[in-house]
Amino acid sequence: MNFKTLLVHVDTSRQATTRINLAAQMAIDHDAHLIGTAMTGISRIVFQDNPLRPPDPVLMHHVEALRDHAREALRQFEAIAHQAGVASVESRLVDDDPAAGMSRQTRYADLAVIGQFDPDDPVPGLMSDFPASVLMQSAHPVLIVPFASQRIQPFSRILIGWDASLTATRAVTRALPLLKNASMVDVVVFNASAQDEAHGEVPGSDLALYLARHGVPVNVMSHRTDIDIGDALLSLCADQGSDLLVMGGYGHTRFREILLGGATRTVLESMTLPVLMAH
Image 1 (cartoon, rainbow, N blue to C red):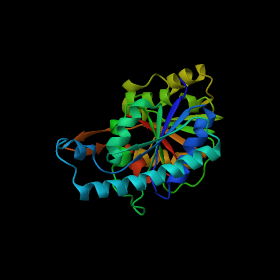
Image 2 (image 1 turned 180 degrees about the vertical axis):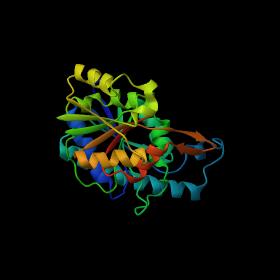
Image 3 (image 1 turned 60 degrees about the vertical axis):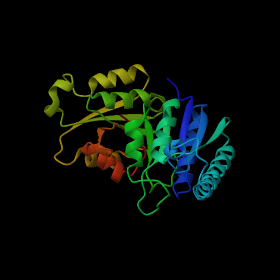
Image 4 (image 1 turned 45 degrees about the horizontal axis):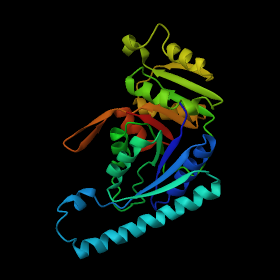
């Protein structure tokens, strides 16, 4: 599988330029179509309330102001993408809140690039659970860019957090186009003895053989840790000089609340490098 359609969330946050540049470079590397999507922040339910009733002029004035804001973000996206040399570029303006709008768009892309929530840079309509909402509602993987990152670099050293789960498997298989281009892929298994039924005789070896058949250079590590797995993953990424973390994203929704697994929540809150997750 190759990436043929990449989707990037576009807004006016200070992180947007880094996120768009990364998506643009990936589109060039994989000869992919790049779609920039900006949401107005107005839920589409507002427009479905009563189609026979004339639109409220005050509401529509507010909507147009939000659309102008989104159009400005898309103009920035187009300028960055064209300057980078992306061959196939598309802009989409969507009347919806960011999480719902982006989640629907991910159904038609191989990978979605979004940003970590930045509490110090509020964006209209963007809630703190935006990354988690998109992850939980997407049928495809998401690449989350930390708000503190300003560097765009190739993913030459990648770390896979492996627990032999379905979500981790989805993340690895969807990340294959990136793994194949890496100079080294580290596979780490934490606390393998606590989940003997999930691994073979040598934890991580089955995945290493699978990846090796795809031409991926693999190094397998098995560690014991007493700290939160998310913290352990991020610490190991720093030690290994990793450019990208690949892992499964755990969680579910209940009464409009997103309940995340501990490692997923920790990484989404504290990430220091881009993270590719699949649910």
